[in-house]
Image (tube, rainbow, N blue to C red):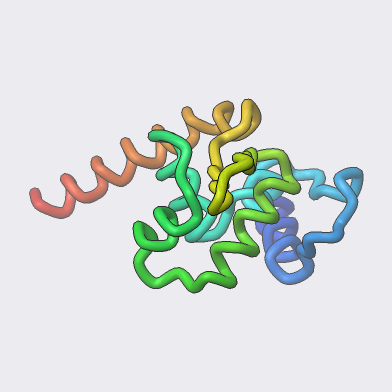
Length: 127
């Protein structure tokens, strides 16, 4: 099974496009998850959105090294995938907030496990 998962992840990594229909998601559930949130920026965006809704410029300033284009593309894809919501408030100037959707909130345990593992790993390096 691991070999099949590795092949699936490689296929997803090389060929995944935003316009792939949902019925063409990878068979492997791990590959599906990786295709939705498996890049550095999406995970860090989700980390921030776990705390509260954020505005674009707040996210941009908090994510050191991300370009506006990559942030915009990531937010759009995450919205398309149903992971986040985008709320536009009818104000002048317009205010837009991004928040985790119900689907995004369902990933909270995944990110909590990643945080716990990261803490344990860093602690093991100091022993």
